[in-house]
Length: 552
Ligand code: C2E
Ligand code: CA
Ligand code: CA
Image (cartoon, rainbow, N blue to C red):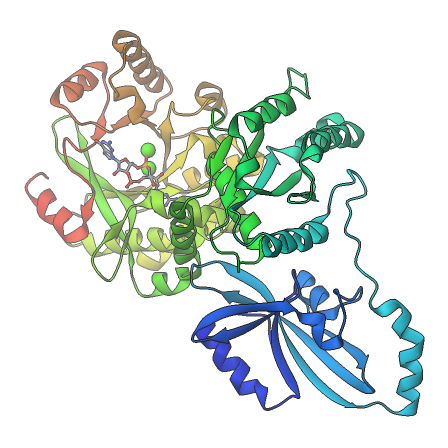
């Protein structure tokens, strides 16, 4: 069987189906060594799976544990009560009701009475078999991953009526500390943090370092004092006194509502909480709430259903007009939308960053480019034959596909005028990469595509970039049109950009134009093209055609 993902119902069917083929088939959550049964479509976590071997704790060489941790199927023999058990451990992912995915193992077990030979082997091996796994982190002396899970589970059992928390901590970019200051210094910092958390270790609290810079506490809610933890964070941040790097220590907290959940899932939720505010340096302690799970579910919906959604045509392009100084339509920008079967529309900011993180953005982009090329081809014999379409290129596209070949391929496939396909590349995309990318962009221009620098002025390196990259059009970020206290200054900056573009032989387009006075001002400055709600919002293709017919 191949490693794969099941939902609860599928798993139940699978267990039933294979049940007759072996002496025992069971589902195990190996991180805490719990057998999982499914009753009425719900998961029930039983006590230690090792009970069947009448052992008190996980075997040192538990094959299920290894299968789960490595994601590779393993085999093993156990001897018990004169019998040999042959165990096949298959890693599987089990998606539970709330969208969380548990790493589990299905054990297929056959048994037979041991022969004399085999009995000999038992005697030889039994001494090592039930030794406990190591539970202590050698660096800090706190509990390690295993130790923390075991102890947290025990605490929750021993204090059934006491509200409990899982507290997780994280240092932003810890790997950088390692490389900037060396391993020893990084270890010192970890030891200092351990010293701060160590005093919490007690009869009702577990403290561990689970991996690298991740510390965790499982503690009664009544013992948690937010002000004291803020002080801990403050103290940790002072551990590194260096102008080149600022330590950024954050904490996430999950208040345990469902005690059945694996401790690893509880810990993940605490981490999920701290990650939500990673960008916002002013927030150092974040409590998990259900909206974070909804976000996770949304992310899973975007990524796991992606291929299907793409095939079913739910991803579409909307067109937003780009006009000249007289308001005549010159073409449009193609903007991706996810139109769900119920008609609801998901905006790109709700799926593009997720697809970028999941390494799927190039597939969507290629699809969007294809739709744009198809549209240009469809317009060839219509009143819209003069229109261009601008498409967006994500910085990551360059890593996954040959952007040049993709576009040239589309021009050939649809036999379209290459100048009509405009490519919008953000300045951060251009700056974040290498020579190679710059050369690729040059190739695209040489072939005849129009290259636009998108969101110009929103990054930090706008001007520096202009000396290295040759592009045809500067697309000025809408931030310049936002009303600020420094109206006059931002107007002067805008004016200088338009003038500079002119000197560099580049056209300008300003996006985010919402008011007539903005159009007037930009026109006076010499800006050639405009895009914004003042003219039109992004709309489905047929609506765009209707709108454009009157403005050609
Ligand atoms: P962008 O490329 O800067 O696109 C312009 C965004 O500004 C669009 O948002 C558009 O609806 C919005 N906008 C246009 N005029 C106005 C205005 O007058 N006022 C205001 N407040 N907003 C205006 P949208 O469609 O939500 O797209 C957001 C971003 O998502 C895009 O920013 C682009 O970075 C990305 N995106 C959209 N489609 C694609 C795609 O197919 N591939 C990639 N890689 N990114 C895409
Ligand atoms: Ca754009
Ligand atoms: Ca833009």
